[in-house]
Length: 240
Length: 221
Image (cartoon, rainbow over all chains, first blue to last red; front, side, top):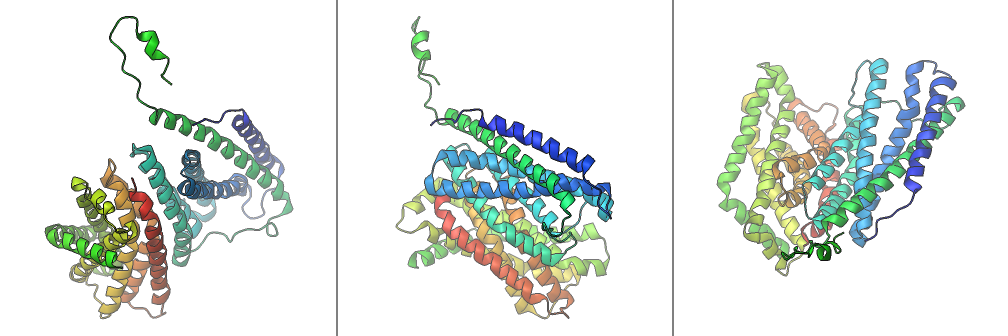
């Protein structure tokens, strides 16, 4: 089982960081303020791209889960673990940014709006699967169970969304390019690609780490060291 | 089909033989209902208004005990491995267990209704509809619950993991069942019951289908 090598993930992370800095600078310093919300609105330049990318990362995790169940290939399990961790992290960031924006705008840190509540539910659902992974020692069971749980949780997301939507609604309607001023487009796009490159690089690095851990988990046990003198050099060659 | 019937019969028999456990779980649910009223205070209007929420939270908490218990027994003496060696599909085993779990939870839910009526003065004359909501809600709880209990029964920290995995997943069931029960207790002048019941049905259909599809992979060796 080979562990992928190469500088691509680190380059992606660097490119993502540069784009994120550039987009954030544009959004904070260059772009005009919004008419009603003023500077508070500028959090949109990270909030909206984070939302897109959190969805994308968790969707990728779901794709990895399906591929793992069909192919039983470890690389999909490694990617699943990486994508779920990054997806949960992005969703947590999303909730935090949302709360920071909501306090001055709505007057409360939290509101039971469909998108907010669905994101929180997703954090707990996928966070629970990460906890499950931590408590299963058998790599095969861990991989299959987390793939199954990931599929079940992902299928649940639209139902959670609609149930909360019926229950209560306050969040702004979704924006489309037509409803957003042209001056806001570029920082949004740059940040969206910045975060995309950043998490793609992180997922690649994290899945390498998962592959290394897996290799040590399923490695054959080291041969017992013979007791006679001078045998050390003989035994040390087979360990990896 | 025969395999399914045999599996259901086996699980009902298991439950019947462990009936002391079911009574204990019911007592646990009733105790939580009593405790919830201390959280609100002796305000009878507020208690009546929140009665449906308390009933479903009590049932949800009780469900983790009953679902976990249903697979504990299969782990003893490697009974599950023996079952998988039989010429019956894993799907039949899953549906047998899920149906038995759903029936057990629905019975506990129905038994908790009189407790709710007494403690919160939250009665309804639409008892059949209430029973229907309880059956649909517990069907939504037991399908993913049975799937997850099969996993967590084999792990360390199983008492923590089952609710951790199950609770976020069943948010739609909790929302819809609480709303529907509340409408039955407090009255439904706008005719809002139907969409919530449809949501319960949709959730149950999706989860029962997914559970049947995926259970085979969960218990394979």
